[in-house]
Length: 308
Image 1 (cartoon, rainbow, N blue to C red):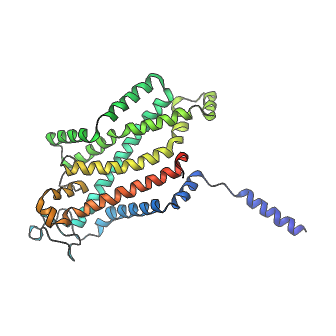
Image 2: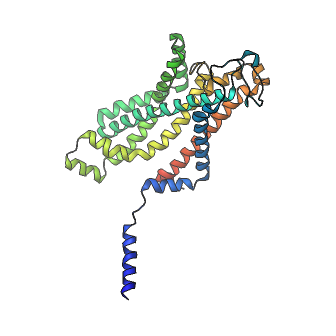
Image 3: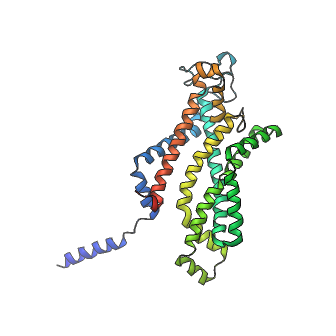
């Protein structure tokens, strides 16, 4: 009898020591149940590994040129062929992926920093602060982003900005143009959260506004920020590709998926040398689709209103 009581007591103690799973762990488990999101995550991880690690295993270099070996179709030495200067297309696609992915990530971080901060300030202070920030966001959203980016890209071309510095300007422009939508979403969340009981407790404790905003309010908007930020990466990659395709974004000799597709502007290259422009186009397609699928999966998991 005493042994049975001891065993039951031990089992009770084990039950009491079990900690509830964190919301993030539960969300991750639910995300793993979404086959499309998992597939998109696998594709995205593979793309990062290929672009950032693959070039170290290539026997060629970006500066290596061989005019006699130019415009060769895929073969055993060059799996994706060569361009008009004899450079290996596979190596250029991987290095271009580094540029395009970094542009998307940095532009997203800039947009999140600006949009979440301004949205939090607008939602917390309301009044004239809210009016100024939201009217500025309305003005930014009313301007077509792509034509404005094309104009700014043309200005950069006239100013003859060096290619190695131009990429940073493109990152900042893409990030600065996409903050209004996030700021409106964060503002709506802050307006709802500031009326909750935990914020009333913060008022009673006499906490500073900065502490209330950045320690109590903004952390509660992280789920929606993550979802929007994921989709922003895909949008920034597409916009960079369009600008580079038009010759107004990242310019040679720095490769990007967008400026590699400019080979399709030449009718001969378009018809007879598809290895010049198909690989970067396929990379853009699968990367953007993977990011969008992951974003949809995160939205279903992190946003209770969107759960199916």
